[in-house]
Amino acid sequence: MNDLSHSLNLPRPERLPMQQQPRTDLQRSAIVERGIVVQATCSTVCAVEYLQSHNVARHVIERVLLYPQQRRSMAVNDSH
Image (tube, rainbow, N blue to C red; front, side, top):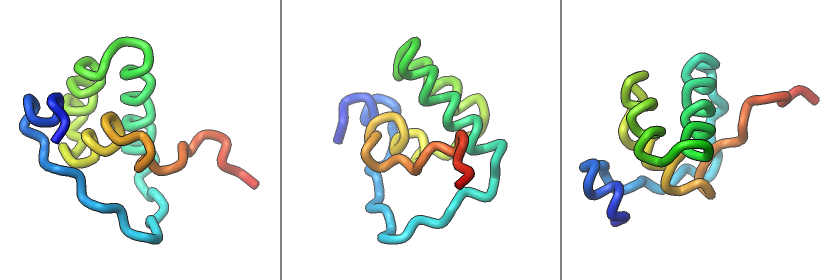
């Protein structure tokens, strides 16, 4: 387990399902995406605090911040 996830008492990440369901909560999606930006511009700790302050589930916080390869696609400009 990652040192940060251990110090934050975050659970181990679960394996993602083969087919992910699309996000239906656009506000929650925007919060998570802003958390990723906070991580890139400030720090992971700041991003964790931001996401926790918006009641994002701990397993989601860990997945998006510590395992970027498991992130869903960003919702920005997703029109085809």
